[in-house]
Structures are given as structure tokens and as C-alpha cells.
Length: 572
Image (cartoon, rainbow, N blue to C red; front, side, top):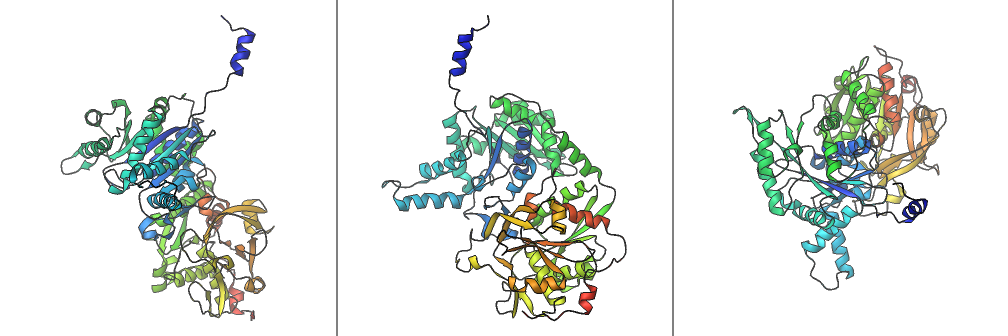
């Protein structure tokens, strides 16, 4: 029987039920470095491609307020968001996989949680109560989780850093246990990522470590809804049966996550093959929409198949021994290689080794040279030597943050004739401080969270290589620095062939420099790697790799040989 017009009218007039954001919590067990960040990002991608509005965050158990003051050897890359948060490198995976920008709410640490609670206590917000881990710390953690809730968000994915069993993680695990109790099982799911190791001496997979990891979770009051098992070898039926029985997980919700053959970008496809995203959506009581992975599959296939030719890029850095220190750099180069239909080969070069040996010995034969960011004096002369080698030999060059500053120092010393030029960061008494401390930084005492951070506007000079790359006269890029190009030297540099082609809107801060000549030579103060995506390579990385791919064999015309032969006298 069809409803009457009046009934339909009444139904349309009724208020809609309140929007309820669902939550997905991802924990890790047995060992660290299992890939919770990649798994979280992969699930987020799949849910997004099923037309759900997704946000993603990470809760880290260390006591630092953020990783901004941590050594790259301790933490790896510090990833910077649009709104200036210094965060865990996993947020880079989140953004690259999903194309969804993260924010200050996307990364909370124990230090940040406790700082907030202590500040409340000092203000008297707790009205004389004894402040304790439960309920005050766990309530603050739950507030951090709820900060992601919004009418325009369907599913929030929260990754819990660390490994189940770590004492530091206990408040976070207790908080998510409480959270699920409060909102109900259909609004909050637990996924546990664990390891099923292959014991070569015995020739078999062992499920006992995963059983024990889940047992620790059960002691806390958390029973996983889904188990994702990292393994070198496929799980047999007996392994799934045992895991389901002893971990109290439905057998069809025990999934495997094998080591991928070529690239981390295969992980979403492996999870999709097992319908992990479908089961998640059903458990959350949502409709299973169709999925569109065509563009992602195309990218992965092109990456695996390789391109028309191999391009070798040298990355000359201070923290080469830890690959995660330059995670976004390597990923941005990969995106650019696929965009240019070339096969990427990276030659990782320690800047200190360039100092100890020579640029020629370590960089000969590369198609392009990239000098990334960093802090401190160690290896700086090696970076400067690498810049000089690129410039004098007509090798395409991309400098980023400190890499730009090294390019400026090299040009000052070896083209402009300012032999004692340096950065005030490395030599406070240098007579030629071509790089100096930003004016706004001179009154700052604390190190944490005080740099020039986040998204800033850059105006681009028409006709420049940067303008050709972006196809725009203005862009917005993420920053993380205290020192800048000294404007006192801008005219002298321009007279010798290095031009400021990107400036802040007020014209004061130099954001991009380029060198005249046939070889592609661009350096920027910001971090373009943070905005590169698999399906949208960053314009500067794309054009840098393109120029490297076009470089003919043999030694091309140098950018600055004539300038080196006859350096102009510069007085500033």
C-alpha cells in the first residue's frame, strides 16, 4: 500500500536521527614495526574509495609533547601538517594513501595528554579532586579521540602506537576500552595487527605469540573483532582455526597480511582481495558501497612494471643510515618516477662521506642530485660540495630547506666570490651570513613547536622553472625552519645568476631560488615532499625527475663555468 501524500509529508518533516561517527581502533602486538601505519592508511583508503568520509589519527605513547625536538635517528622523519603540527611519520602514510589532510587533532602523545591535564589541574578545573590516570588521563585521551568526530565524518580510524604489553600504552588501551563501552560495539571496532612468525629451523608458522598478545589485550578488557596477521608465508586453515579459537575471533575475520613483493602501495589491494573493508563496514552497521580502485591499481601496475628508462637520483643527506629519516623524500621521488614513466634508482649518499672523500667519487654518473633538509653542522660541507658538483657539471638539482641554504652558501662562496660565506646557524661570527635567523625567531627561547611551521603562501615569478612546474603564480607549501635567506645579498646573487623566483606575499622571505643556465637547478625553503601523492606527484619533484631523465649522456654545458672563471666582485 502506497503512503498518502500527507504521510510522506509528515515523514519528510520528521527530524533525521543524529549523525553517529563510527570508530575503528588499530592495535599492534608481538613486536614493533609491524606496519600499523601502512595498515591503517590502507584501510582508510579502501573505506574512502567506498565513498565513506574518513579521518585518521595516531596516539603515540612517548612522553615528548611532539617529535619536533627528537633526533631523526630516534624517531625518523618529522611530518608537518597543513596547520603546523609536527607529527609522527605515519601521518605521511595517511595523507599519501588517502589524500586526506591531517591536522593537530591527528596526533596525540602521552606528553601532550599529560600537559593538558596538568594545565587543567593548575587552573583548578578539577575542583580539588585528586588527579589520577583513571579517570582524568583516560578522559583526556577519549576527548582527543572525540575531537575527530564531526557531522562530515563517517569513520574515524585511530592507530594506537607501541606494542600491546608496553607499560606506556596502558592508559591508551584502557581509554579505548572505555570508549567502546560508552558508544557500543556497532560504533567502535577493535582490529589487532599481530605477527605470525615463520620458524625456519622448524619449517612452520607459529601462532603462539599472537595468542599471547591477544591474551594481554583480554586482560585489559579488549577482545579484537578482527585479527590481521603479518607473515612471510600464507596462513593455512589450521593456523586460522587455532587463531580463531584461542583469540576468540570469528574465523572469517582472521586475515593475513603477507610481505608485499614490490611496494607498500600493494597493501590496500591485498586487503581488498580478502574483503577486509567489506567486513569492517558490515560490522559497523553501514551499507557496503561499490569500490573504485582503478586509478590506484593503474599506479601500482606502472610502478611495478617500471618505465622506459632508468633514472638514478642521488640523495645526499645527514641521516642516510636511517631510511625513515627521509621517508617522504623517497616516496615523492617514487611518485615523480611513475608520473614520468621512468624507473627510479636512488643512490643514498651520506653527506659526511662526501666531506671525507669527494663529490666526484660518490656522485659520478648520477642523473640528478637532491639535497634534503636537516639540522646541525655535521655533514654540511659535504652537502655544499654536492651542490657545487651538481652546479658545475650541469646535473639537475633539487634543494629542500637546508638543501636550499647549502645551495645559497655554495653560490656565495664559489660564484659570488664571498669565500667566507656561511649560515649563522653554523658560524655565528661569519662575516658573510648569507643565511641568518629569521627576525621572528630571535625572541624565542623554547625549541619545541616554535619554528616557522605549516602552510604558507608563496608567490612565483612568471617565466621561472617553478612557474613552469606549478602552472600557477601562487602556491601554498609546508615549512619547518628557523633560518632564511639574508635579503642583504639578494641583488648580488641576482647579478651573478641566482634569482629568488618564489617569495612570501610581502616579498620579504625567499622561498625558491633558481640558477640561470640550461640545467634544471631549483631549491626551495619549504618541504614539497609533504604534499606529494601517488596519483598526483608534486610539481617540483615531477619536473626534477623529468629533467634528470632528459639529461644526455656525457658532460653537458655547465650552468656556472663562466661565472667561476670570472667571479664578479661583490660588496654588500
